[in-house]
Image (cartoon, rainbow over all chains, first blue to last red):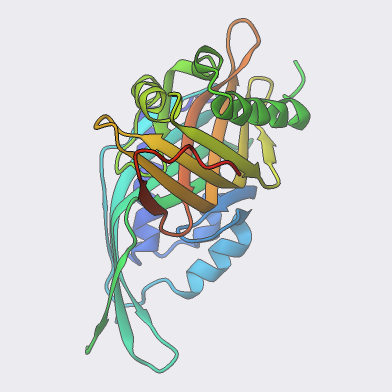
Length: 145
Length: 152
């Protein structure tokens, strides 16, 4: 099996954020191993990545809502033939549609991410564990657009 | 070689918090591989574990500091013979002493931890990466100089 490289992992991280920003039309759940566990931004407990990906996909920005992610320097630790840990900071600005039809802008300025990738038997790198958090609460504001 | 057992990993997590709360500095430091990286709960950036250990030593392991934790259920994902991920919620109460000598008491009711353990060359499980965070903003208050550490 091909050994994991830092470049492979960095590419997957950028693909993840491209999907989350609505710039790549790939199903988010395809990024995750079926048994993956995640800590999302504000969740008090970890949960199955499958559940989280379905929920997150519902809120992925369409063409009417712009999102922008900026990923900092990605630190990759190769910890075995088929496993690597990616750790990095990020900022993420997105809009959400509220139940009343209004829109809210959410800016996460000090995001921190740990994503652990494992190469499957099919040779594809998938996330087996993810921990996203923020060093400061995201700023939210209603937008009139 | 067989996968790391969940029980072994859970025992290491409990040792980690036990060493921290009992202020066993050298045992606590030995939990980390020299190459380990850490996202501390209140840090904006990742740092090498050796730097974090210097700060935790100064702020949390001194005589006027205090650490108490209640751990939630620990999920373990074994990734082969040498690697496993532990993830769990925790409730943390800490009294830390800053470099200025001032003491601060913080409650972290909804802490979240990811710790990646790897076997070293001697077969000992040690942390190669750690990500601590809080699901809610942490409440911190300054303690008067004479207050003893709060017991939980």
